Length: 578
Ligand code: 3UK
Image 1 (cartoon, rainbow, N blue to C red):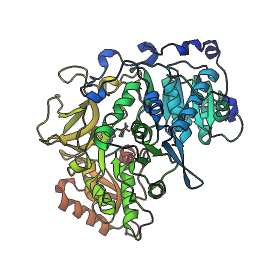
Image 2 (spheres, rainbow, N blue to C red):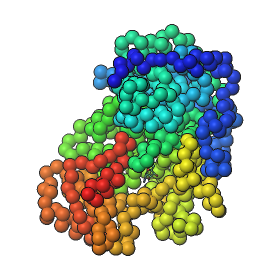
Image 3 (cartoon, rainbow, N blue to C red):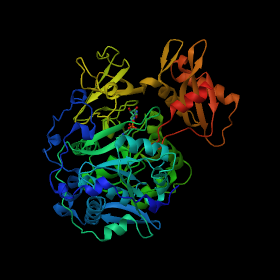
Image 4 (cartoon, rainbow, N blue to C red):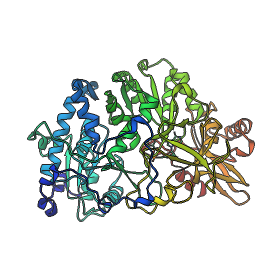
């Protein structure tokens, strides 16, 4: 492993480039450079709403930051962080100065040009956010990476996205050290240079910033210049990079938050999703900034700390995954309240299906109706959701303004009401994989549905256009000819008093092909015995169609989850099969 300072090397190619090119407009309009899918494989895009009319030249960092300062709101808070346990805020003007200095470092010290890809790595904090904005402001491409990724996974991303430079929180330098070590197992040769932020020793990004001017003239990017590449948290195969433009960043802000969440400048956002995950990029940064509001960036949240954070920062909006709401509800319901949640008004859940039981638990604990929303990295953000007033039990919601959604059968014909099929969506954003043959599997390539995105989810739609989640299409359990959606059984089990968390998958079975197997985390103090197995089985048989009951139940201490809070069903399937 190399020392972190050794990762600073110069590239002859970079040195040969001139800064002059930076002052020209950015549009690097070669498909070869961006490695976008061929245009005929693109998703159909629609911008049929007034708020989705964007000019030909657009820089998302200018829209989110500079325009707010220019409108005289520079003194308003934008990022809150805990410092020695106390809330400390940075204003829009302070953030702008920081962003400008980082942009100068990128252009002058890194010799980067518009279109260059910059890897970003860090927990959710102010410097991580500033780096993201600086990369966009300078016309470069942000490649966010999840904090828990190891060198092997980072190398896949760096190789795929041809990343040459990295900005990394010093706390996470080690895995970058591994990919920049020429003798290491996971050496990624394209990565030439890394700078570290939140560095207290000399030589960090902050020291490079000190010498830079506080103003920076933004790169005049086109609305369809690449702003970021977001990698999917794929469970199998090579990770997929999804390419999003400056316009896509604005479209996500003018979609779900504008029409469903309706933030106001006094809102204080908080939550768990990492900025490297588009759920977090929107909820924890872009959405609050689009509406002149502020965000709490916290480096390490668990359900208890999130509750405390809401109290400490007087947060009004919360973004997290269903498992967090479940655990927070359990904590709130238990004994005397430790934290005040009285400022909290809106709670958003995404990443996986929100069981109705979780919705009710949270409502009982706080009085707040959760806003569920399905989004995808490919689609940038949420496209089906509902306002708190328009909730329909068991449904994710309806296609939000700007998006269309439908459920289709294997022949791509629309399914009748409440008949499950594949979810297809289109809107102002859509899937563009970075140089990946799997593009043709996500975006329908021919026929009347050409250009629609297939998210890989099975849904049923009622006559009013509400969408009811069934399962991931490849997660459906087929037992003795019956199609069984694991999430439905999970939702049922979660309603039982003894169950804290559960995951339901198909287990290979000679007689039935598959049987329903449940992995159950019991609440503290509940005995994991045969009587409990029987009780849970009977409970399911009484609540939903009896053939869906779990023939096999295994009690476990915890469930495998991704960094984004998703249950890792493939791991449960592996355990069930072995
Ligand atoms: C599943 C849901 C049921 C679904 C994401 C909000 O999760 C996000 O992106 P990913 O690429 O995964 C996408 C897949 O996750 N899913 C997400 N939300 C829900 N299933 N109900 C939900 N509410 O299978 C989807 O295809 O990791 C979520 C915003 C941005 C995102 N990137």
